[in-house]
Amino acid sequence: GDGRLGGISGTLSAYETLLLRGYDVSAVILEDCGLSNDKFLLSYLRNRVPVLVLPPIPEDPSDDLTDWFSESSSVFGLLEDALRSFHLKRIQRLNSMQRKSKDLLWWPFTQHNLVPVDCVTVIDSRCGESFSAYKVCPMYIPSF
Image 1: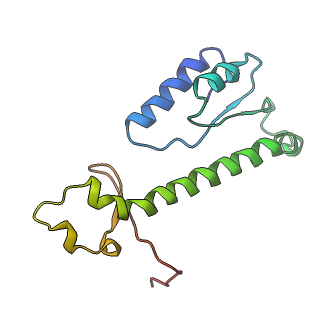
Image 2 (image 1 turned 120 degrees about the vertical axis):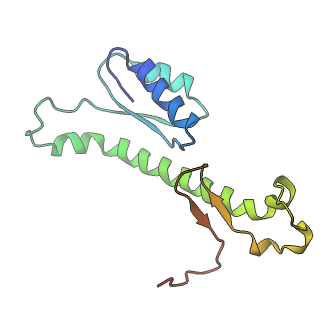
């Protein structure tokens, strides 16, 4: 996100563009520039994604950033929690897709009742892009 003047519209435009293009947005993070952009974004994005605010970054990048990282550690902790939660929900959603696929999807030239649920491979992608296949496994199996 953007904490500067005009940052609210820029942040919302970027957020909505990412969603429209099929990307997952797990959090919005912006630098506190003293304009309280986070207040509106927190209200607007409530129940969608967490909005996190970092303290102002020092003007001179050659400065020692140790103090800034210390001051920001709680925000980074919240970000880590948000990313873990988002990933867990995504995995739970992918786990449920094998069962739901028979009721929600149409497979041409296939008798759905003849396909065992554990033979369904869930593909997480958009048309024309790279994809990842998700297969539920009860334990880790080396794949090399």
